[in-house]
Length: 109
Image (cartoon, rainbow, N blue to C red; front, side):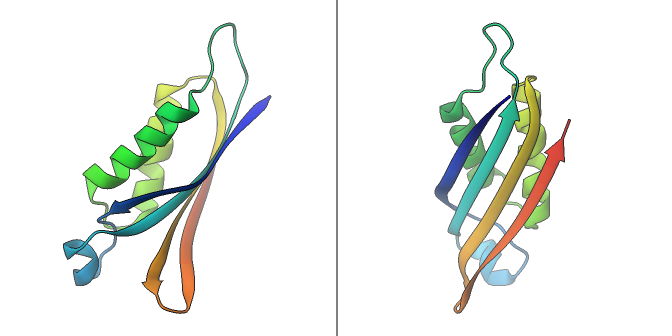
């Protein structure tokens, strides 16, 4: 079993349900851990996973972080069948002045 860790992947995205979150992009920080079994030539390309996470966050304009987590994890599993589990955390470091808000989901297949 192998694990890829992508930490502190940062992009600007529209994500949230508050009016100001729907109008202006905010910084979103993703951390992702993907466990997989290497099978022949099959592997998980971390550059492609990073690009996928960034593209989905920037293009989809999610209302809830939970919806983004579900969609991104499903896309990772669909793109790399060797994946056995995904842990994805999305953080909004600037939404509150005194803390970083994060939501995390773990999926095992």
